[in-house]
Amino acid sequence: MGRDDDPELGHARDRWQAHAKAGYLAGQGIRAPGPSIGSLAMTDAHRPSQGPRGEPSVPGAHPNEIDRRRILRLLKNRRRYRYVTPTVLPGPDGYIVRSPCCSRTVDSRGGIIDVAWLRFRSSHNVWHLYRRDHGTDTWVIQSAQPSLILAVAELNDDPARVYWT
Image 1 (cartoon, rainbow, N blue to C red):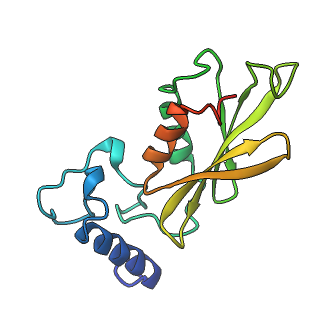
Image 2 (image 1 turned 30 degrees about the vertical axis):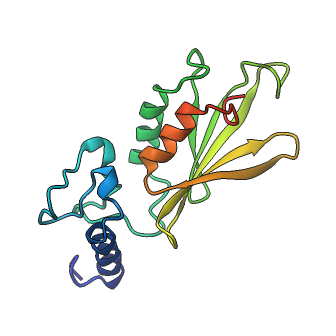
């Protein structure tokens, strides 16, 4: 069965192209794979996760090692606690970001704590960004972003200090 014969890949590709044509991704500088649509240009920073032949990733494609490393690289641009080294672990439908607790507000010994959960929701084709509520030991959704890059950018910025506590 070739790439064009696979109904699941075909459906994902059709959905991706429909979003691109509708202008959903135009503001991100993203275009659908294949022929150019308008004057949109795809940059490596905005390139969506792709399968082995360049097709959009299909549901169930997360976590994967390429995006895990991409997140690690992007976390170097964060504004808070730049002197610690976070880790990115595979999690349910995405990735868990963990880091030493520098402020010692959560762990008085400075141990490793959960910072964020980046979860890909294939049913909506969005990334949900969760923060960890350490008081109740639960994940709390903070936002939904159309790309992994934008979700990590929000995590890096963290103006309200809800992730890097």
